[in-house]
Each structure stands twice: as C-alpha cells, then as structure tokens.
Amino acid sequence: MQTHIFRDRETLSRAAAAHAAEVLTRCVRSHGRARIIAATGASQIDFLDPLTSTPGIDWPRVEMFHLDEYIGLPVTHPASFRRYLRERLIDRTGIARHHLLDGEQEPERVAQRVGELLTADAIDVAFVGIGENGHLAFNDPPADFTTERPYLIVTLDEACRRQQVGEGWFASIEEVPTQAISMSVRQILKSREIIAIVPDARKAVAVKACVEGPVSPLAPASILRTHPNTTLYLDQDSAALLTENTKTRRAR
Image (cartoon, rainbow, N blue to C red; front, side, top):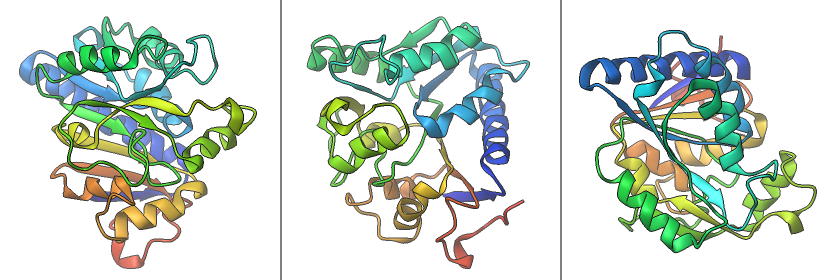
C-alpha cells in the first residue's frame, strides 16, 4: 500500500482526484469503459468536487456501483447515500449506468440484485474511506474477512453511528439507522485498484491502527495493506500518529 501525506484536506483531495481521473481515462481508453465503486460521507466531498469538474473524463462510459446504504432511510433524508451520490456525482457528470442500493426496499433482495450486476465483470477502481472505528464501507469491527458475498446486511456499532452524528448527518444517535447494506470486504478487495481518501484528525487513531497495527478484523481497513494496488491519501491531521518510517511522502 502506498501512503501519501499532504499538508491539508484540500491538497489531498485534489491529488486523489487527479489520480482517479487518470485511472478513469486510462480504463476508458484501454477497454472502452470504467467500472467504479463510489463511497460517500464527509471525507469524500472535497474529493468528488474536483473529480467531477475535471475536463476530459468520458463519464457516459463510466458504470458506477454503490458502496453502502442505510436500511429504512428515505432518499429524501440529508444522510441518504443515494441522494448524496445523485447530487454529488451522478447529476454532475451524467453517469447513465449507476446501480444504487435502495435501502427502503427489502434489503436481501436489493443486495442480491445489485450484487449480481457488480460481479458480472471486474471493477477497475474503488473509491473508499476509513471510519473512525477503522471500518471499511459499513464493515464495522470485528469485520467479516472471509465471506465472498458481494453485499451484506450489517448491524452498525455505536462508534459508527456516533460518527454520523458528529459529522452532522443526524441530530442524535437515536435517529441513525441501526442496519445497512454494505459491500463486503472481500468484494472491495477484488477491485483492480483502490484509492482511499482519509482526511481529518478524527481519523488519526484509526489510520494508525490500520496502517501500523496488525491486519485484523478489529481494524477492518487494515486489510487494504494486502491489496497489491492500493493508494492511501492522508493529510497532516489524519497522519499525525504515524511513525516517521511509515511516512513515504512528506506533507506538502
């Protein structure tokens, strides 16, 4: 796993967006399309803004899959990930082929239907974040590192739900749904390339555990270190607890 550290969130986001744009352009050029996995949440906003405004990306040739979604949350709710992706990615780019997880429908059926489409061909690149509890997608600790199912129905732990309140998506923890549809860890790892965007001091403890601790279901995103083509983008705040030996690129 390559780890790049930048002076602030904005610089990190622009660098990650440039990397992502290069990957999308290369994939479309080499095999006529790009299949991607898109994450949501506060960590992705400053990344998606420059990515969607990058000229020259052939967005009609991009096919997008949804990483995770709350069960039972209306699409009209500000925290709906379907709403987030429509407003911040789909509507801005004109992506025609997108597969959103409808958490208002029967979740097992949704997971099966979108999972079949997802696994029909290889994913070129996955955009992901890391949660304050080290989660990858909504795979909270201890995460399932073995299942081959593309999507799972998961129960969200308290730390995960408190993060959603802390980021301003919900007014109280009681409002945060307790379950979600989440792409599985093993399915994420099947992507040809993974770009992880992780800014903010709130993520520093999780980053240290996932980058320098053991690869363990107790730090779910630590599994990214086993993938042959993962790039982790950090800012000074999220990288603050890492040792000097880990910092392969100085903050700038």
